[in-house]
Length: 523
Image 1 (tube, rainbow, N blue to C red):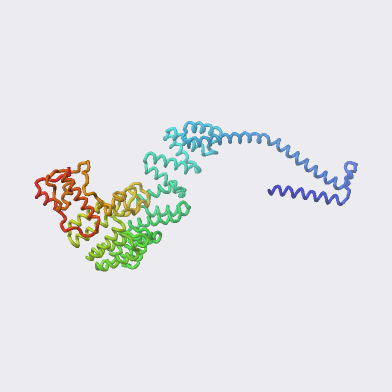
Image 2 (image 1 turned 180 degrees about the vertical axis):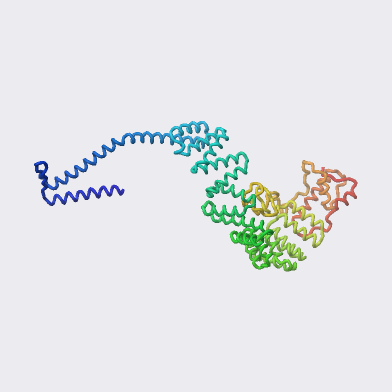
């Protein structure tokens, strides 16, 4: 566009010049070799312009003739290069599609038309063709040769890393990933593998530097980087608790600042602060984390923050937590535990039952069984609550890659992934709730199941069954089994309600064995 405007400006200037000369008549006299030439100014100007144009055309013709060999050779070289790039493109597509034969053919064709020094992709296509042909040793040699070329070094490290992963050599894979991450920390595959290696050997400072490099190169988002830093700082604080409490406290407080809702960071930060007699600051840390997400470790540390507190003081601190997060099962569980320690059985029972209504799970039934045993010692009710606990969904725990842990860990023990543990209920027994209204809707007489039950299971059922219902007069084993099924169904129906059961829990297994000459079996 600029060139077009410049051309129009030149033409316009020439037009103005010729018009100016035409409006001003004059003559031009030239004497040359005894002859005089007399022309007007307009003719002279046109002649001069024509001469200049003729000189320029002649110069262009001479230059074109002079450069014609180079022009012709460049034409054929460009054509050859275009054919080579076409073969390279077809070969890359074939390699991506898994066509090893076509990829090898196009590799050879591209290598003939294009120099590998000019186009590094030929080396990549050659290595990919070797992999498709099953020549992994040859592919590794090609990737190793790429390490000498600065432009291809990262590609070679990537290929060697994938080959090491295929062979299951994690040490070699992490070695190549570490070399790549040192040169280019923005590479996700290299950074993640190196991060796993650093965390596996406990090099938390090196892992923190790598995460900071990832953040500076904008490889990961700011929130993700802060979360990873919080996890790594928490792990560092755990490792330094005994050897360097001050450094552990600094790391834990920074982790809590980065992720205030991260329970492990809040617990270890508050614990280290409380150890230095700053109970107020530690309590604030725990309260902020409790508001974000209640956790039993937070409640345990918060209620026992002051070792000299009486049981009623701990109960009051648990109630303060409940005020911060109402209508939550963990709040009710914390108050119930503190009330049980304080022998306030009414409060403990009320809060445990409230926790069951909000979130039926194993721990709530076990806590209610402890309350029942401490208050009344009624073994029948205790066994009933324990049976419910066995079949209830499990309490939340730290779960990562199928591994259930009572304590949080920074990395997965299976895959080595950072921040793999999550606080949730394990899938085992999830949803097997027995405390519901439908459990009581059992028919008066149920048919005996087709499968035979073990003898030990039959003894437990007979022992737990009420003794008010007598056996039929004929004493048949099938009728006895039906009667026992009915008794168990009625007991389960009554067990779905929280009001007290009859005082007689049944006959103990040892007493029943002494009175009965033989053992009852379902079938």
